[in-house]
Length: 257
Ligand SMILES: O=C(O)CCC(=O)C(=O)O
Image 1 (cartoon, protein in one colour):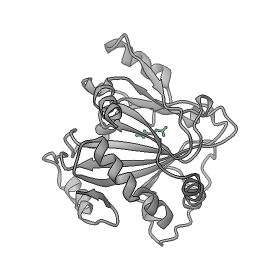
Image 2: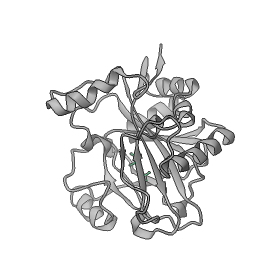
Image 3: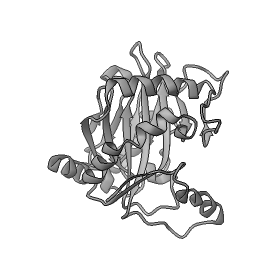
Image 4: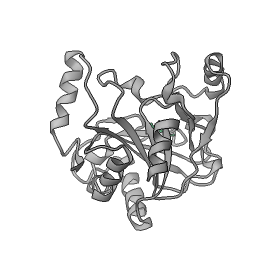
């Protein structure tokens, strides 16, 4: 654990061992596909859908808070041993999932499957950056040709770079912007097996490229905060959004020492 803690702090990300069984993962993968198809076991809609039935099936499929729609997904991400692990990793006493996403990258979608370079914190104007992390749970084996998430080592220490965005598919153009400010970057590909997890800091730049394999590349993405996280002064609209932090069915606390 000591080395994982060090990696996360120094490099801005860490690749962890298998934390979920193949059985748990296969079940979750099947259920996630149901959610993508619009079948919600709980009768509750996800927070947002960036892909809908009838859209191009080769596009990257992103669904926000799929755990609202499906008990199996909720159970997976709230597994106590997972919460405990994240608390140890971040040296914290409390872990709350405040957001989640499914990112399903179909096979053979080329650039349509790309997720552009970004840091998560750029989408969260209501949080200070401390105590905020993302755990990426692999629901499929992720190899070099599947379009794995890739991280820029130590980019958690950078200033914000403008004009970078998850939804921008032009990764090579984005890299030109990055290289204007940082000429010696080290990119690490997160090639992980089903049930393994990567964790990155909210400030770490990451992206993913085309899935050239024969299989979908599937991640269940858990955005969590620890007791060190702090809200910024923010607009009424965001304050309303953040009220859900008190609703533990939407934003479950998965560890509280
Ligand atoms: O799954 C991907 O390719 C991108 C995921 C991502 O942006 C994230 O985990 O924050």
